[in-house]
Image: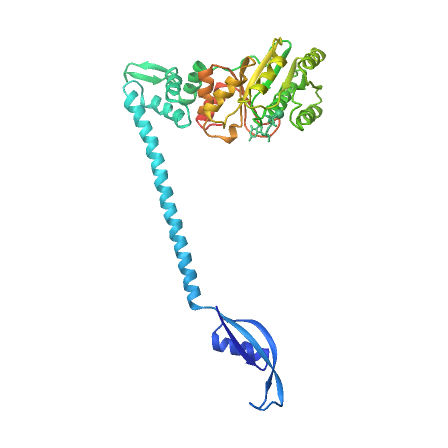
Amino acid sequence: MKIKKLVVDSLQEAVEEVRALYGSDAVILSTRIVKQRVIPFFPFPKRSKLEITVGIPDKEDFATELKKEESLYQEISRLKENLKEVMELVKKQKVEREDVIRDNLEGEYSIRALHLMNKLINRGVSKDVAQRVVESACGYDFELKRLDLKGENLESLMEGFSKSLRLVENFPEEGFSIVALLGPTGVGKTTTIAKLSYMLKAMGKRVGLITIDSYRVGAVEQLRTYANIMELPFRVADTPYRLRECIGELSSLDVVMVDTGGRSQYNEVRMKELIPFFAKLPSLKAYITLGANTEERVQYEVIEGFSVVEPSGLIFTKLDETGYFGTMVNVAYRTQLPILCFTTGQRVPEDLVMASYEYLAKIFLEAV
Ligand SMILES: Nc1nc2c(ncn2[C@@H]2O[C@H](COP(=O)(O)OP(=O)(O)OP(=O)(O)O)[C@@H](O)[C@H]2O)c(=O)[nH]1
Ligand SMILES: [Mg+2]
């Protein structure tokens, strides 16, 4: 922008002159009253005039601006092109993966069966597990001379899962049971206990809550709040002895849910702390709680770490935070631990789904 100064008689004149001289883009930046000699070189008389400072936008400014914008657009379209290439690559890789399976197994399975296998693989199920699941839903088709799915995708997947994965069948158990949730920090143990307690109460079961988590600030209050809302008896047990006392106090109920503090599987001391709490506790069902969005390798480490207490099964939380449900299938298949339930969001009590082969099949077929 160029700056010019003009001396005029009035503001009205200034506006007109600026417009006439520099066009409509020019702007008056400031004004100042100055005294000017009426006759040049004679000190007197003097009269008041208006000095104005005018800003005139450079023609080049606009051009540079335009150029900048143009290069920005070019950059965006270049990025778009790159993104397109990446997407193409991903698609190609998928097809290549499919081809690998086709090459290896084409002679053995029908196209339908291979297609279902690929659906599983693309959502993170390992090849060997996917093959095992689909194979167990297949029968030999003499016409095709290949293994073919016995039913439609949904029924086949349900059958395949039912033959390869275990689910907890009798929850809650008949009579008195203690249900403890163990797992890493923040996976959703306390929230899941609240959801399960609500469900059990709605089923007409008498439920009590105990927390042994006096480690984290606010942990006791978190569970106490849920207990108050649901009007359930609540106890805090900070020692293994006190836990047994609390269980004794609540033994006339059907289910006692025990919440534990989250801990890292790498912290051996914190892991071993769990042993005296749960060792030789009759009617105990301990469930390892895993985030479905956690890397598969880490999930095995978590299971190994928390197996200081004999696990009765697995709970998968935060299904709403991943699209790769295959990890859960791999973990449940390889450990052969039964799945109790899934959680699908933060809402208590809504976001809880008890494990079923139908639900598992549906999430892979995007039918939920
Ligand atoms: N998106 C999502 N968030 C969840 C789910 N379940 C629990 N959360 C959230 O995860 C956070 C931790 O939940 P908590 O229940 O306190 O987890 P925790 O395992 O008891 O945590 P610690 O006791 O500290 O180990 C909270 O913000 C929950 O609302 C779920 O299924 N999906
Ligand atoms: Mg907790």
